[in-house]
Image (cartoon, rainbow, N blue to C red; front, side):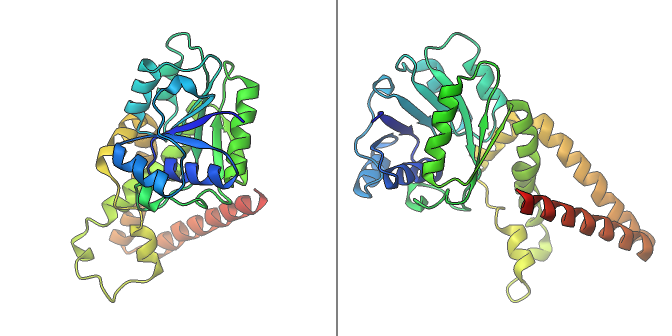
Length: 275
């Protein structure tokens, strides 16, 4: 059996370790001493990884800058699979392909998470039924891509999507990063104070992902700023249409805007059912 390690045992990396162990794999981990201790105690990993070059498969479940630093400064086994789990892909690809590498790179992005972080919140079931995006280009090794796909399927992922890095970043700017910005901005309203007793599911849905870790997310946003700015500008322009209708007291126009959104949501729901 191939030797596998995961660098970064937070929510995602810790969940990957637990899911792979559940599937019967032996996994080692790389992180701070206290995290390694907790992961070993929980049975998520066997040993602390000391040397990346000892492993056939290395998953980098770390923030983008540290991921790129490790890619540039670590030694890897010839032909090893090195897979990052970052929420942006163009920046990582640029780093990887800036010079010749002795490993086979795969960009991965499992579409699963929680509004909490850290190994203590990791779950062996986090990826059950989830999708994972695997990034490919003309330099991608097909065998490495298939092997990475198999690992995620055994972690519980139910849907594999393949695409290029640019396409990934544009889609994620809308489906994830913009959503977090909107939620984060939404809770800044002074009306949010004293909300207890005045909320239902809609408020919970809107605020669930507002508590982002700014140290992590600000950097992700900056690494994908062009795509996010484009989506944010479009959203602002649409919101201004609703504001204009309300300011003018134009109920017909407001109804038209709401109808457009409802019909678009129905189309999205239909697409989801097909997938």
